[in-house]
Image (cartoon, rainbow, N blue to C red; front, side):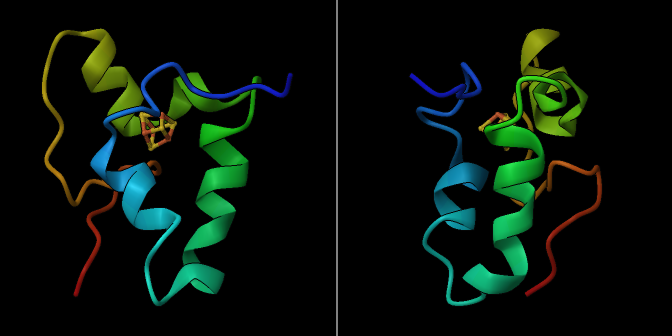
Amino acid sequence: MSFRCKYMEGCPMYNYLTTAVRIIQLQPYVKEYCLSEDHYEECARYKMRAEGKIPPDNLLPNGTVLKA
Ligand code: SF4
């Protein structure tokens, strides 16, 4: 089975990245972080979750904020 970030279920950003109208623009984040065994721990959301914090819904894996 392929790798998946353990916080994927219930991650609002993951859900957004995979359903947004801008999916072509956003899909690279999924590959670079959510499905990457080597890089998922670098995800800004992952780091916050690992510290017991709740990341804001619009925080992107690279630490920037998704703008409308
Ligand atoms: S890598 Fe980050 S954005 Fe992707 S599922 Fe995990 S916590 Fe969510």
